[in-house]
Length: 325
Ligand code: UFG
Image (cartoon, rainbow, N blue to C red):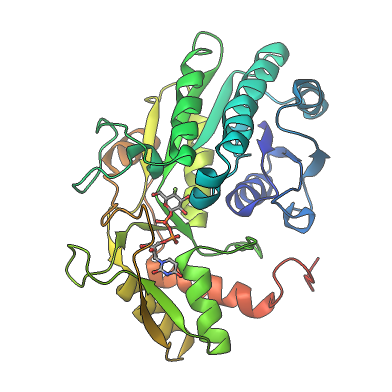
């Protein structure tokens, strides 16, 4: 396949680009490097630097690689930022997706895999979450991803699409890891606390869960990437949206226990207030992805924590001073 990966210099996009490239596909990465890292673009892929709303440059990038398929990852993805700057999220996540769809139409692309999120469900109040559950996002990030999912339907007659709704991505793969600024995610923050001995804040210990902390479905980034490649191969024979999660929930305390086991270091755990907007429980039903993609997540939470720890130890300053690149 010849594939354009928008946002392919970001955490999940770079792993998708690397795995596609390693399987012999021709890959171009389209990224403005506002959040991504040039050093994360795999050696075998070409990087086109451009704005996601710039339809002309997108079309030129698609023609340049002769792409018939797009993995559209370019997005803003911080819940708190989406609350303080909703207009940025409308611009990048909604207008950007519209520009990608117009460029796809103009260049004869016939398949598009879209990066969506469990945030489209909001706080469903039950687990596991199925794709037919009500879509009720509780923040502009989830709202804009849901609007973008709906835009995909407008091109259904000429571009086959699927929205993949990720649960909690974590881990590292192929020398590529998580390097956000600021970092807000549990696994990298807990590993950082293990590395430097600083306290780790647990946001809420009075939730209605078994140990009082929030439960999430942590899925290894390499398993996520594999699902995208399968989706590219299986389109158009896919439903409009699929959950990507393991089907297993782990509490914040369970993740911290795993971090301690993997690193061999004790964390300094401190109780902190709840983080506004955190639903108590988010766990995927992944039966549809298993059935329609032939996908099954192969890596455990321990695998993800071990791989992320290894990446952090070999990249103590993230991509800022990557010794391997
Ligand atoms: N947490 C802490 N301390 C921290 C960081 C996180 O206790 O320092 C807790 C959070 O409160 C939450 C859990 O760890 O209960 C996981 O938090 P993350 O920030 O790692 O992930 P979220 O579940 O909040 O967010 C993920 C994606 C978002 C997506 C959301 C869908 O990262 O992009 O799921 O609800 F929107």
